[in-house]
Length: 94
Image 1 (tube, rainbow, N blue to C red):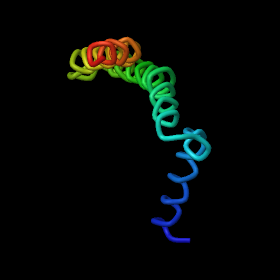
Image 2 (cartoon, one colour):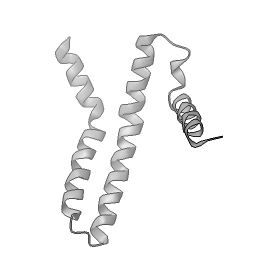
Image 3 (spheres, rainbow, N blue to C red):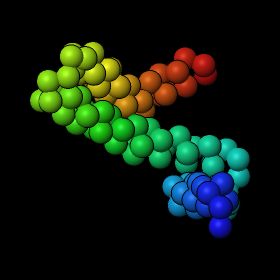
């Protein structure tokens, strides 16, 4: 099996495992499920990983540690506040 086909199969499997509701639901409920999983699981997890990476950068004495910390803080605000941001935009549009 070559690398491209392995990567394709891996990405397809990861997509099915992350978003199983795609196959058995309507478009609206699928999008709502994806939004929920994205704003409540994936973005906060990435925020925590970003903070850990910035902390490691700071402890290792990297010259760009201050920039990494600001990016991590900004990403955490967006990651943990994503549901509130989506709700605000949804209420504004309606």
